[in-house]
Length: 197
Ligand code: IMP
Image (cartoon, rainbow, N blue to C red; front, side, top):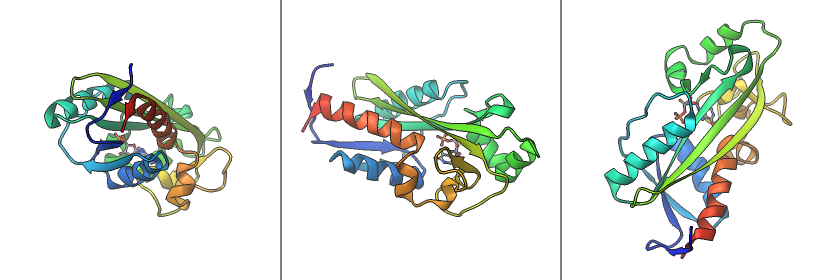
């Protein structure tokens, strides 16, 4: 893609209804001098085995509805002993059985490896989509620990920081390694290269 002049300068709308996701994204984008705003518009989240397809479809719909260049992010928790479950169904699982339910499903299982995957999808007002992904590996803790963050943060211990869940970390510490920060950093580098202010 050739370098384009972007009418709003280095600025991007992050479409989400999740304020925690936005706070994480805002900080990371700011590292690249990209200003952002949270745009809360209703977009349908398709059911698909691949979080990339979910993010892409939502991004296209959000750009069409708003008429603005936007990013959407979709993530999932993949647990090895459960053959990747809940993966793209993470939201449903979180809202139904929750953290306690996931811990119950795993029981005394010794193999507790898991990873988070994040896909950031950018879509411009012409419907062109680009995606960027990030993965963080870790394990599912034995019990709920910590009150920071959101979702499965209190039961996920990332590799390299075993003994500490995302829920026990500051937003900065989580973002130094998280799936979302990796995907957003890839997006930010691409955006700066392709869209001049
Ligand atoms: P979403 O569809 O991207 O909003 O994510 C699906 C579900 O995964 C959410 O309901 C959260 O419970 C969970 N999730 C996504 N990202 C994270 C994260 O960074 N930490 C903990 N849980 C997350």
